[in-house]
Length: 119
Image 1: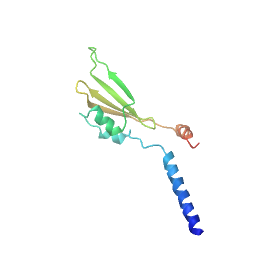
Image 2: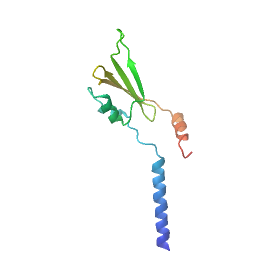
Image 3: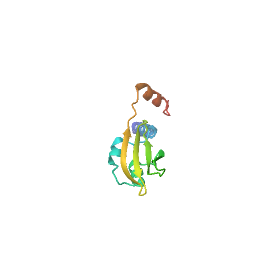
Image 4: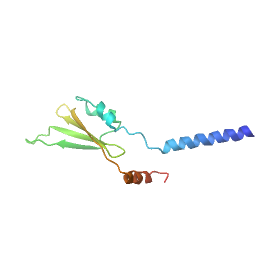
């Protein structure tokens, strides 16, 4: 009887722990550390591999003579920060990058946490 109760308790604990991990948000690939891994000459596909997902936004860079010299792709992280990578045409390789850090206030964090599924 005691062994059965102990076994059931262990199963309940294991299911509870698995449930908590299932509800946690996925790890974000868009980080400053991953942006630091992006180097000059990388292709768009290589950069997408570093971040683990396709770009969130794509904007063409204007030029004075009307020819589009390149494109900037941006990736948005879970906390709202953004990674920008600039690609030059015609070869479509990275030549610059930038990081915009979102400064999240306590109210913003509470608002974001209130949208989690278990609330």
